[in-house]
Length: 92
Image (cartoon, rainbow, N blue to C red; front, side, top):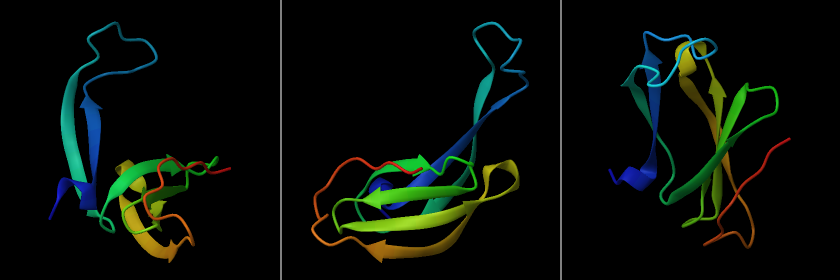
């Protein structure tokens, strides 16, 4: 699998970002989630419940529900007409 066909999650261990000084802590991988080929951008819904990953190579947007600890559950995907090769995504 290409690194452009997956999302990688990370956490920062042993730190309260509100009160800690730099450096914040140790970056730890939390998981990898498969996407459609050519992932170029991603954004969260305004309520933080959903993540949308744009796969510009195919003109597809993959949708995921966020869960405990930042886990992702795939909901589905949609092909956006005319979006092959596009870059940039926004959600509200």
